[in-house]
Length: 135
Image 1 (cartoon, one colour):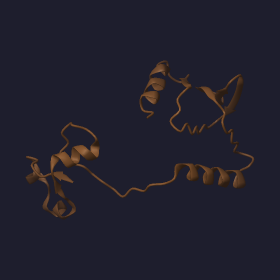
Image 2 (tube, helix red, strand yellow):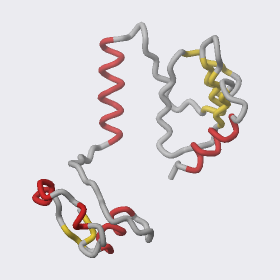
Image 3 (cartoon, one colour):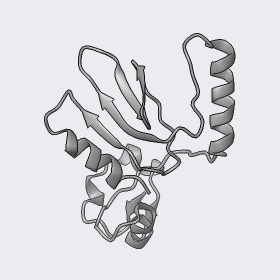
Image 4 (cartoon, rainbow, N blue to C red):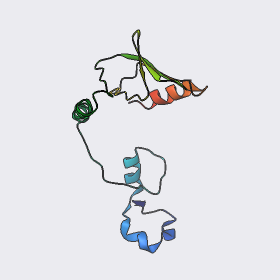
């Protein structure tokens, strides 16, 4: 989609014109949820899913096919994730420490934990960036 009032429309190669919808700028800003000016919006097909069902089905599949490689810790209140060079990462749940090479944490928007990235001296930035993006 291209802003129908964009001053650079003439620079679009003619072979692409049949792929473009010309729309009002308000439409683009609404879709991007911004008031900033963006002359072009690229869209693609999307899907909607029941995230709880997707998680349950994924966990069930992993437990059936990889029981020796996969553990589920329901309602484990994580306080800290430590990303550690040269050894397994750690997930702290109360006073318990879980060590793992890979960590998948389904937070459902909860963010009462911290990420400590021992690979980088600016670890606090990664933690702040993560929490800034949780809605």
